[in-house]
Image (cartoon, rainbow, N blue to C red; front, side, top):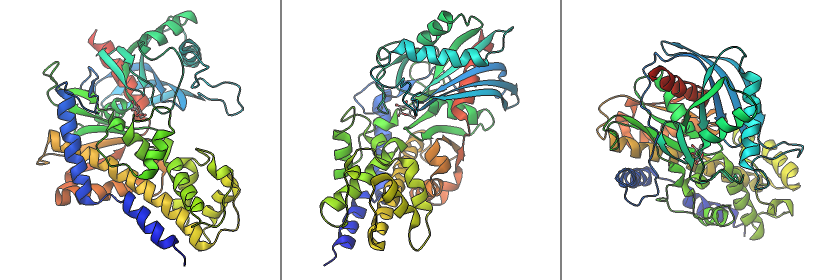
Length: 438
Ligand code: GLC
């Protein structure tokens, strides 16, 4: 008897996040926020940014560095005030060369090599004959004692570069710039990418309360109305990817155990682009091992042999033959000749994993809203950047539907919008804020 439908139903049950479950997650998240803010044990680090909401009047030409772990982007941004930001010039380079010439993310690379590489990109873009403030988006958990004092607590997203953890990344970049003789650029602010996303949207929309990344990594920040350190509004980086209040499936446990840092970043490992492809692979591999899918291959057993970008076309595939799924199985795993129901099983795995990701993210945002405005008495904008939000078919829709399920009618107070290039533009706004306040 064909057991595949029954097995799939069991997998579906494990990955389903009901409305009630989302509300429970939101409540747990809200409690973890309060504990973290009060300095009590919590999986949420609640890292202060020492920066509040922008006024929209920040002005000037600023260099922005956006370092997220996959690429480094350097932008020359003109802030025109009145909420207008224009990117005048930009450079982007992968941190890991596809042809294998370099990899600044591996344990064999040192922090000074990495920052020298970034400084090189900055020198290409900083026009001679002026001085430029620099804002640096560094998308990893940093302990901050001031807006320009950011010490990397630990790498996430499987980055392993040596000689950066425990050090001040603003200083590392400034040193690298000076070693290259780039004296006319001064690093003034280091922010998280979520903070950048919030700042860039808040530049034009004063209702912005949450900034989030749904991309290679997953994280959110929010505007705390009265921060205990300053009694002023301050953006707080939640490092919500580390939230541990969600039940793991057997696949999450397998993925976590084989990861660089088992036990850490549990939500991120369930929700971010770094890991969704691997979750799909683990499900499919389990189905072949148990004989529910008839064909297997050695390549299917290679971790991360399918990426999140690979599963995008699967979600969009409406062809009766499921061409995109068959193509993925053939090109990534060397598996051919699967039946339609086997191909459908792979598509279902991809749908379940991505839908759960969106619903978990939405639940954590609901947790933030439970904390700052439980009655949803005013409008809130959630600014989001990242490849999952921007490109994964159905992802943005799933977020929106999840919010409606959690809040019912009141969900109309909540707008989720793309903060395109937000992490870079936000760095420019942060630097301009510091520059103008001097
Ligand atoms: C990881 C980092 C976090 C960042 C996120 C998105 O979760 O720890 O700081 O915001 O990725 O890039």
